[in-house]
Image (cartoon, rainbow, N blue to C red; front, side, top):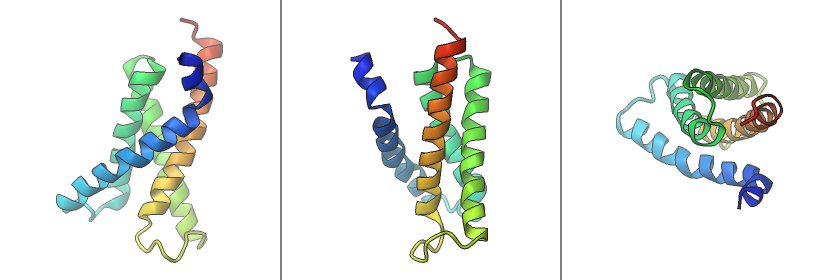
Length: 124
């Protein structure tokens, strides 16, 4: 079972991010919190990354928080660089889907690095 999860963890994380991001966005939209979209996305993706880091990485709490918010901040920075250099698609006026997909890709990259570091340096 664990080998199957490790084999397909990128697909599992992609689905988890994609499914759980939309409830966060709908809650923020219903609370009229979209006046500050960058802070909103960093908090949402940070909370989501913290939950996944807590359950899958199982490091101490400070490393989980640090990992979660660095990952979400880098993902949002990539979105803003995409908007600045006009890489973002025209159909995504508010950048919501660009933010979701960039955070998914950045998070998957950081998750893979974190798994490799944990397996090589932090033996159970």
